[in-house]
Amino acid sequence: MSQVPGTNPWITHFTTCIEEERFHERWTLNFNYNLQAELTVQKRAEGWKIYKTSSFGKFTCNVCSNSWSSARAIILFHYRLTKKSGLVLLRPFRQQCRECMNPRLHKPQVDSTQMNQVFDRLISKILKNCYKFPDVDDKVRDLIPRKTKPHETAYCEACRLGICSF
Image (cartoon, rainbow, N blue to C red; front, side, top):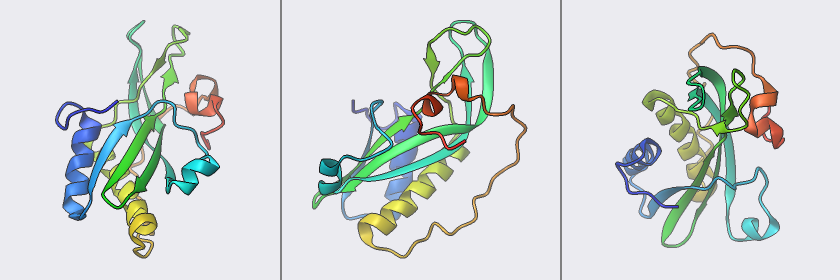
């Protein structure tokens, strides 16, 4: 499922962040809602790497219009570099509304500042694992303390799949 830059904030921010690095290869971002937390032997042999992170996200239930925030919006990436191009696959994990209990899961909305921080961390992994740069992920994450309710594992898709570390 490929999208054109400018039509999706994730793709737009990724394109901007990756262009700043001036890689020789062209990197693209696609969504894949079937990504798993572990790579198969075949995927590893094909050069795929994995990166999981979290961000502050906002969720809105389109059934009852309830909205909530979470500092634990889990985001999973698979990425690899071939001789000609780089590819990143993204899976943002969803959460269920605890107000209406509808089983539908809702995608996180991540603001541009948080999105840039997510991509900065991802690009650090790409530099290290694909280009053999020294580990630059030693930067202290600039976490802005925000009051959120405790993480409710029963409503978290990543927790249900054993991916969430919270």
